Each structure stands twice: as structure tokens, then as C-alpha cells.
Length: 406
Image 1 (cartoon, helix red, strand yellow):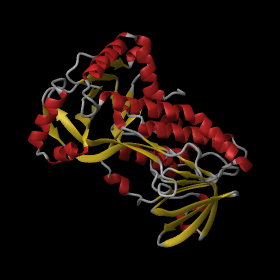
Image 2 (image 1 turned 180 degrees about the vertical axis):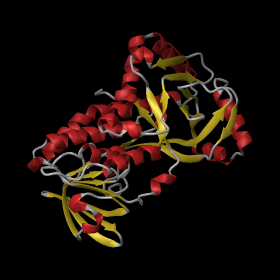
Image 3 (image 1 turned 45 degrees about the vertical axis):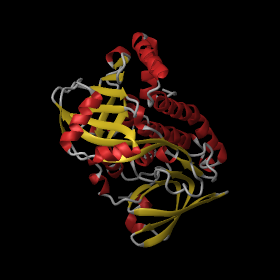
């Protein structure tokens, strides 16, 4: 899909634009949409084919703060299959400690939402597709699927991107290159800091005999956290375990899987009745340098940081990245796009939220994924205190919904 001079059928071998977005997933598409009505020429390059997202079975956990951003982008109303979360039950296995966060106590309609990845990606792309054609004084934009970036280099005057599209090599010159591809493009050239938690996450959809409407569960265990997120007729399950154990769990037949899940989680939602297709992926903390070593280049979303899913912060932080970067771009004078001063302002704006989000999720994993007796008692007391102190609940919930700057 494309608009204006960037339409696919009008591409020349050498292109130029103001903003080049490498990666057209939800974070990259959100940035393109936030810049839709500016006077800027924006081009988003997505390596996957246009219909490839339809095969992605993942579900996303969105915070209430992310809903507000998606409303500003004009796509929230187009989303379907959205399941709200109004209560979050937090507990520790074989412990008395627990805490419950409720939307009505925090004066918000919902704490979060669960929806298919494909639904969000489709809504964002449709919003880009059906935007009005560029008018006088407005810029142009394109969203090119099947455009595989092979190289990014940057010099004092701008960034230069080489990509293949339709079997032909193109070069795109941009004042600012935004890398939102998950971190693959620059990983070898500028390796990120990586910490392996020694855990993998097994993900599937489960049904049960006594589902609790609009209630999510976060249960901490010595082998890692387990989350049940309400979705459609059951729950999206995220079950973390050491790598080898997770592979064993992946190979269990359905009867054994459901039996072991019940033994691990308990009776709060009754008997587990069915499980869908299971998938598994390794968990770690990956963070790119705060200051990108290349001029006229910025990393966004998972290319900037990838976190443990324990508090559901990953995509929500990426969406905040995209929104804040769009504001910096829109506030910058044309000649300042991509300059070190503009990028320094963006880094400064995002630094506190980014670092706090990373410390929050990393701290939860390190604190709760062990069976040390003294720590177990301390964790139980901490959850009990959290449940009894309204201001503490509000602090934690606000962090989860809006990040530090909310």
C-alpha cells in the first residue's frame, strides 16, 4: 500500500524522504500513523508480506494507557475481539501473600485489555490505508510490505537505507531512520546488552470450568511467573519455566498438560478443560545502548529494549516510545530532523520511563523466581502490605498502565 510519490508503482531506484521507518509492526505502524497528518514525507518498510500477520496467533496485553494512545491515533474503535481486564489477582505459590488490583478502586474503566496481535496490526494498517490522499501543505507517506532492508548506514547529513522490493535493490535517503524491526538490523554491528533469565515462556489458549469474568491472574512460582489473561471463552496462558522444563512441557499430551497446569496454578478458575496449540520462546532482557552509535538513527520498541513479559510492559512501552518520538519529530524544525539535539531531547524524554520499566520487570523476575525461604516470607508480606495500602496499589497500577510519565 502507498500514498503520493511513495506509491509502489512509482518508486525509482533512488528515493528520499524525511522519516524512514524500518519495521512495520504495531510500533512502527503507530509511529507512521502519528505522523500521518504532518507535512513530512514518511516511508515505512516492512519485510513481511502484506498478509503474513494473518498467521500470527499471538495475543497482546494492552494497558489502559495504551488504549488512550490508540484512541488518539483513531484506531481503537476499529479493534475487534477485545477482552477487558478489570481485576488483577497477584499471588505467590504456597504462600499466604496476595494482592488484588481493581479498576473501580483506581477510578479507571479497565486496567488493560487482551486482543489478537492480528487485530491491532490490521487496524493500524487500515487506518494508514484509508487516510485521505495528501492535500496541499500535507506530506506523503507509504507503507511498503515485502521491502527487506539489507543495510543501514548514517553520515553527518542523514541516513541511507538499502532495501530490496520486488526483486530490485533501492536506496532510501532519510533525515531520520527509525529502526523498529525488533533489533535484528543493527544487532551485529552494535550488540545490545543481553541477560538470559534461564527461562522460556510457554504460550497457549486454555479453557476452564469456572472462569472469572474480566479477571487476570499473575502467580509467582519458584520456576517463574504464570499469567492467565482473560480472552474470549477462556484465558491466554503464559507459563514460564527453565528452558529444559519448558521443552518437556511443550511435548506433553493435552491430558498431562492440563493436569500439570492445574497442579501448578490451583483451583481459582476450576478445572482446566482444553488447551490450544502451544508455542515456546526464550526469555531475556535485551537493551540497546541509550545513545545510538549512528547519527540520524533512533531505535524504537523491541529494537531499543526487550523485557520479560512478567508485567506485560514490552509492547506498551514500545507504543509510548512511538508516541513520544512522534511528538519530538512534530515539534522539530525541518532542518533539525534527525540532528543530535533532536535525538538527545527524545532520549531525555524517554530515559526515566525506559529505565524504570526495565528495573521494574527485571526486579520482579529476580525477586520472585526462586525458592529461598527468607525471601519467600518477605515476598508474602510485601504482597499483603500492597493489598492493604491504597496509595501503594495506585502507584503500582499507574506504573503498569501509564509508565513513569503517565
